[in-house]
Amino acid sequence: MEYFGLNFGFENNGLNLPHLSDAYPRFMRKLFLLLPVFLICLEAWSQSVPEGYQRAQVLLNSRSYWDALNSFKEFTSVEKYGNLANYASFHAGEAAIGANQPAQAIEFLQPLVSRNWKGSQDAEYLLATAYFQNNQALEALRAIAKIEDSALQEKAQDLSFEYLSKSNPNFLISNLKEFENQSAYKAALGTVLKSKTVLSSEEKALYYEMQGIGANASSGQLKDDVLDIVVILPFTDTGNGQVSPSSFTYELFQGIRFAVNKMKREGVKVNLSTFDSQRDLNHLRSVLQEPAVAKADVILGPIYPDESDLVSAFAENAKIPFVHPLSNLGERFVGKQYSYLFRPSAQNLVEGIIKNLKGKAWGNRVAIGYSGSSRDEKMAALLNERLPQEGFQIVGNTKLDPRNASTFLSDLGVRPGKDSVNLDVDQVVLLTDDPTIAQPTLALVESVTTTLPILVMDSWLGFNFANYEMLEFPNFYFISNNSPALDSEAMNSFKSEFYGRNLAFPTLNAVLGRELVYWVSQNLKPTFGFDLRRSLNQQVYEPGKLTWGFNFQNSNSNQYVPVFSIETGELKPLLNQ
Image 1 (cartoon, rainbow, N blue to C red):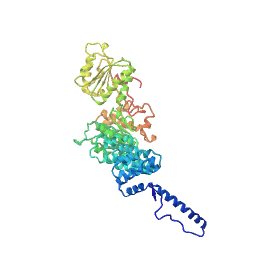
Image 2: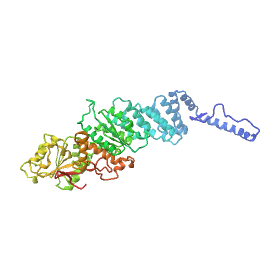
Image 3: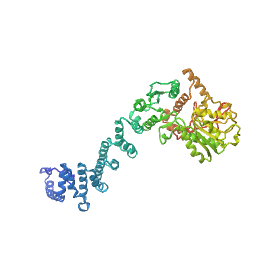
Image 4: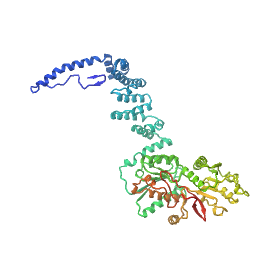
């Protein structure tokens, strides 16, 4: 029997009473005395429900939604019908949803969810249904978040997935942060992205991020004592499909492979898996699904921003350290737990420059020249902001190219026949790796007599047209960017052994590849549970094998940025770091 929409569990054929028994005469006599009283109360209760309300229920059960909706409206006044009005509004909402009138359903249901009655959770679920039907997905999701009943919450997640899996990916992406704790939301986002044939970079990043969720946990494998290194580099491209031995990525890989093979010869348990990203994001997607990637202890590469962003997103959720081998642009990794730059970030480089300028106290006037690369423009902007805060005066901030490189210093007073004591600047910072800017700059300095300190990137040490020992004054200083320790015993040994195996001396990229694996092997060990972050936080400074060293404490990039001078043919740090 049902009243007010509630089922009391009695069938229309009445109560199923036990038969009389001689063993229980007193009990049965009392039961038959109480039965008439109960039936009288039940009949009175039935008579208190208005006939129109009962008719509305019949219409709703028979799916006559419009007629039911209009009939329930009559009983929605709380002042007139008390608690019955709550049930009337609830069923009116049901009828409105059935009649495809979600706006009316919302009007009936909104007041119910804040009332103190036992159907409020059901009303919240029904309200979410109405919001979805009315294309108010945000309101629906917020209503679902308020449902505490576990059974209703499970139904709500099913409802949410059914609606969201057909929605626009832009909506799902833009609101992910607010609803990422709703399981159906992320499941729907993955379904939507997977069904699209063409994805934007942001959509791809989210898709790969979700592919990475729980990768290690879902593999069900226990950690072993083997260091599993995965390398993902763009060895070939879609243009020619060939690997060029002179490409910087192949040179980097030569150093990585050399280091891994040396570790194996020394008895270290290490495994190297290599994948070609092919500069194809769809191909990279399939690479990230490889079992070797899921069980990796570290991922080295890829190089290009779109690829590295995707692998970073994957790594963050799979909880696998990802290391970019060459970039200085680390702002995209800010706040990340598993994404690293092997080199200093632009911010690290700027802080290193400022520390050395303050330590040498050459004066407070600084001129900045920079190329059009992303790193150099970023560093110039940061120096322009930070130097005045540290008491320096910026007397020039110029974007350089091969056409104006020869006049940049002369405009500051570095000209033949002019004493450097009377210059308009105390030190110059040149932010570029471009040899077409370096060459005219060096030619000018060689032709004049000046002691003006000129800070340049350490890449200038490798230019074959540069001979700093021929200058009258050693006024060039080199900003470390994971600078090689060129004259160290370890470097000489590496060059000799590398030549013996490759019949060529290692390039700078090969040096960085070899050093990258050394740094990984020193910080990813079974004793730390292959926990890179924990190991890096143990020490402020860590000496390098082929470079001058590292400082990754509480950082996702190398904070150790000395500036070097050349003394008797050797690099010497200006300051004790």
